[in-house]
Length: 242
Image (tube, rainbow, N blue to C red; front, side, top):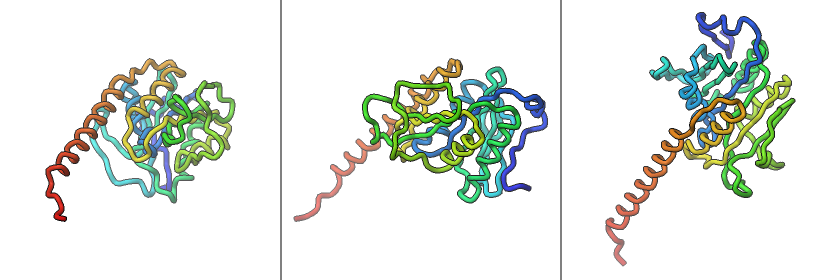
């Protein structure tokens, strides 16, 4: 077996028989887990169909049951009516295979007629300059423009997202990267909602982000309750003797 393989299930191979101007949406569980949260939410709300997996030599050894069937580390979904491919990465590819992972995905995407890509990432909120919710970067014949500032000189995109963006650029695929502000180590549905809302708008998907915002509020309230409980515990604790 090749180190990285795009595996499409037999019953869905006919979808890709004829080339089509597909749009790819994907991201990774990086800063704020924005890429994974956003793509999983889009799959759920669009009722996208799982059509395959990306199989790698060093892929994580986990599976789980979801409403759509078996969840695997790297999943390929399709929303046929919108010619939309959503790749959900439930884990980060291992460092030795990240370049090949991106290369194989891009080669397959071009082979089936793929025309443009939108990537989800996260940007440390300490780089916020005003009231903007995200920054962005385009390559190729990218038709999208925003009032928000672009990714500025001196700021980095890192990890598998950077490699995938590079591969798409090298193969002349018009690519947009959206980087909502987030806390790097925090699971951040609110930042994911920024991405989903913007993608829904530019692609005409009509996805409501209400559930993501409710989930974000629940997480924030839970975190605050934990902090309050810890403060109360510290106040009740034994005082040091002087």
